[in-house]
Image (cartoon, rainbow, N blue to C red):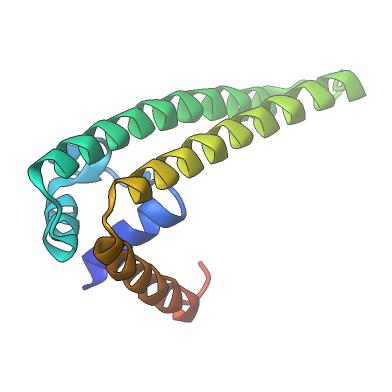
Length: 141
């Protein structure tokens, strides 16, 4: 159940940055299979979800690369010469990347949800609520 909750949270909240061995568009295969089983996804639905997750993983990789570059610029900034324009430039780029990630995440969630039947949506909503409740009880790191 923990793995399923993690997958639901990944679809519902964010992409996972944790490395996994076998992946389906950034989601490990075991979690994808569990979601497929719990929601009883048809073969065509599974294929569409794989395409959605692959697109999201590609977008997330671009965001990660951009954030690494921004973080490198922040770490190596010459503090003696750091002016407001440079601060604004770095902050704007970090904000742009965050917005791009949020847009991709929400579109992926919306498109995933649209693939589901009414019965699957009810089950997914239940799973999502349970995962969010469990997440709320975890201590902050």
